Image (tube, rainbow, N blue to C red):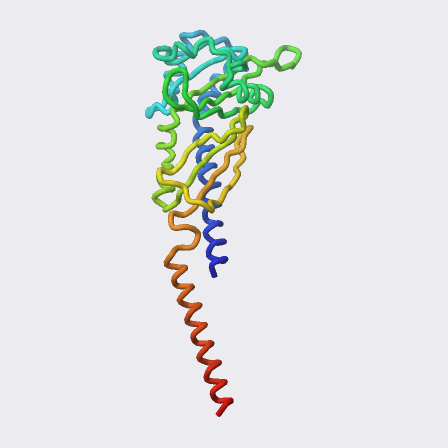
Length: 256
């Protein structure tokens, strides 16, 4: 009964973990669609100046300001930023050489798929993640060459609030989402519940573009609650007592 109960709870937890990761990915794709506008314009050989970039970025800015900064990085070097105020330090950063960004930036460049970097402390201040969206331009001979990146800087705290990660705790789950640092191999926590994580968690690996995220999850009460354990113990004791009584009566009758 314990084994069956634990199996059922782990199936529910596994589904919850995978569904949560897909919800995070789906929301990131929603913001990535805005980055794709810049990408499509540049890939269609349209030149964007700073004024046009600022106007387009302002139009794409979300009401909750989850998108903290829009950036364009030609040849991997950040050349345009919106808003400029407070983000001056980001201008001139070479993403393909930056110690904390180069692994994800080069991966996006080589794969042609968007890549998520972070969360980490930003040069502009605060914690966020970077979405590297690689841009390739095709010439007259149909050969494509790397132009650079359209980059979104996401305010990670606001993003997690927006997708209601707190509902996992309301559903009585403890959780931690983490990934491995591409350079050091160390664990980077992406999100976690406020409570202390118990042992014996279920770990679910989830594939995201150019990376793997790991989701550790366990119900607050464990896989089998104390109430359920007590019930099983009571049933087991009752069966044992009943079996003993039957054996005693049978032996007593045999002796008579």
